[in-house]
Amino acid sequence: MKEIVGVRFKKTGKIYFFNPNGFTLSKNQYAVVETARGIELGEVVVANQKVDDQKIVAPLKDVIRVATKEDIKIYEENEKKAEDAYKVCEEKILAHGLDMKLVDVEYQFDGTKILFYFTAEGRIDFRELVKDLAAVYRTRIELRQIGVRDEVKMLGGYGMCGRELCCCRHLSDLNPVSIKMAKEQGLSLNPTKISGVCGRLMCCLKNEQEVYEEKLSRLPTVGSIVKTPEGKGTVEDVEVLKEVVKVKIEKDGTFIKKSFRAAELEVLKAGKKRESSHLEDGVSMKELKALEEGFKRQDDI
Image (cartoon, rainbow, N blue to C red; front, top):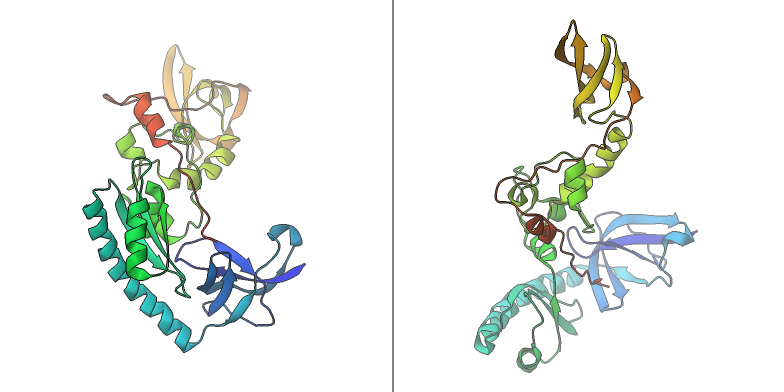
């Protein structure tokens, strides 16, 4: 077991563990720490505690000090400098005619590096742009290409549910999402209905998948022969979240459909696996597969 504190550098960024180095830190405090990128200021989100060695990527870097008023002032000044650098970089991108979109600018706390985040369709030769920026700011310049999900996470926004985007509110990591999840959740396979602001599959498909998998493991599938309180029947439909099953039962030579709680049923013969394959008019599998396009994540530290 080793004592650690958890520090985050962005609102919903990844949490990194550091050696407290003798400091006692509480949640919501700010600390100056040593990272692979240099000296940084971050928010403490996990107070001093001991964790298993297996959960730690050794060696742990140190907390240098609890952030002072002067440290906070430097951080705020860097934020203002970053706004100015954004405008300068945009002008130079236009001057060089580069097909790239600037997303964000970040000043390193100790001023030894400025990071420019951008998106682009393909690879960009930005060597001349870096030279121009280095001539203006006289410090190390790094341009980092990011994916569309990272862009939305940085810029923020609201989803079709009317709430702040999950990636901006609470998701520290952007996990892969697949069409299979949409199928298992019985959703209509229409890109406009299952893709988010970023144009990729909605993160909430991943958030809800565990619940669907757990419930589906206990529910009969469509086509299953089941024993109900009113006789034997065939499963016509399943409302997964409510755990309600619609069954077609034959009575006196006619078929009726009735809904039962899953707990009331006994499966006599399993049917096919529940999976939506409904493609709306004008939608192709090629479009759906495009939503699953991966993106390369680069660690900030």
